[in-house]
Length: 199
Image (cartoon, rainbow, N blue to C red; front, top):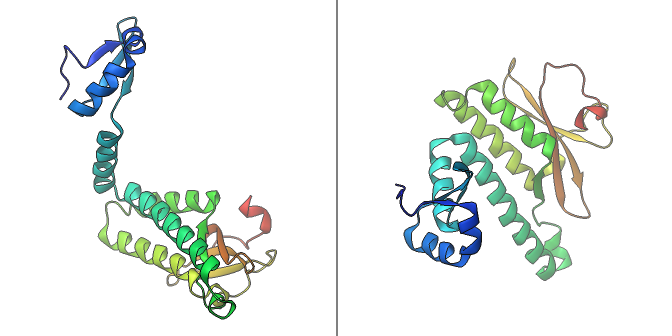
């Protein structure tokens, strides 16, 4: 809850006494509204309080939770991948998991698919969507189980779902770097995939 006497300040005052305001933000955990010419222009908040807001938003919106979970999983796997590749022997390196990375186009495809399925409103659609997410993550185990994608520059594709709701996950396997780049996610009934589609 805002305290109107302390939590609304002019930008000029904030600039002059920024150190005092930072102490106040840490202590009160309340945001401060900064004004320019008497109108609200920005809100400044303590980092810990902001993180709490993000957690609340993630709990309320499954799409936000998915995006944060996926990014967290990517960071965890990247650090695990880096540490294991430094310390592993050549023999164990062959069995080491691949790092699955969603490229920007694939992230957009997933967000659009989530909305198209109305997954935030339908438990069945949400479970289906989570199943797709898990199949994408399983590419870390053996991405070469996926067949070559038709018409794509050494690309592979993972099929998920049952007819008529089959989706195609287009990916590129980089053996030397032990990466799987997920490039594009599309409905299987769309026209034949072309390599220009991932740009």
